[in-house]
Image 1 (spheres, one colour):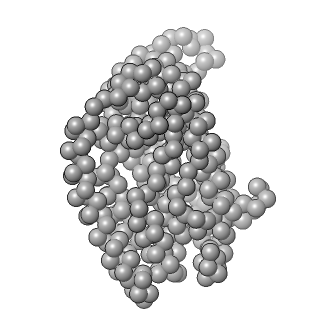
Image 2: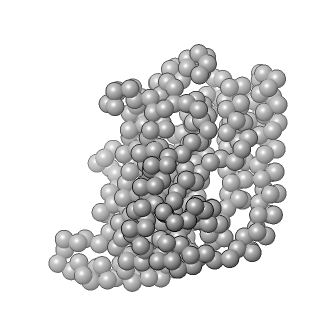
Image 3: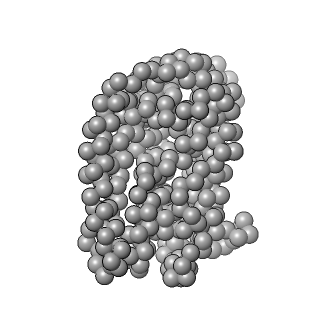
Length: 329
């Protein structure tokens, strides 16, 4: 990475220190057990039966999306490794006291609860093939993923800003569908996870806002580089040992039921362009000025493509998923 970028990142220590308030203390944090039947209580059979009755109302399509979201959350080791690959923000000892290192570990500690909670919900529901799900998780962590950041924290934090918002949208919409189906447990679970993602999104977006203020040309070029190709979803290499197109089919179901769609993708781009005031940035290099124009037109362009994509979704044929015992969704 260019020395100028490294200097910007090094000078952000105090700013990042201020963003640590977007993380909660362990004492103030929820834990997965708070939202699940208490298996140590005397009436645990009745509590579990009531829990599973509510789970039974969730449609298979929502279950498939919930499993995909959970698998994505469970690949957390990959994401912490990615954060520590960014130049200037790594945790060199594994217990470093820098603000960047404390952010990385604190963010990871909060995110870790998401996969744990969704995993336990699905296990207690009795409605999914947990072995197939576990195989998928192991494959995904082994396969990893490359968001195209190339160790550049500018690009990396553009990516995390985008992805935290996308994840929040996905969990929020599953909560809505759970409420519609009558499962208040799942509604609460997905809602509380979406709340975490909103805090994390706020911090990552602030990191890039600060970089825009200090190095607008560098920030715009990093944003452009991430957007030149479609943003790589963190679970795009998921595999259940059977279906090589598993992510694509999971993604189609998520789009068809409105959990995460091409319209959401376009909206996120437009949101980030507004949030970072891309259109009004000045004193740019010639290349950055060209990138500025590209970025300001990108959201509307994807919005138009989303309309065409909807026609393809309307023709979607349900497929079997090993996660739900080869039922179709």
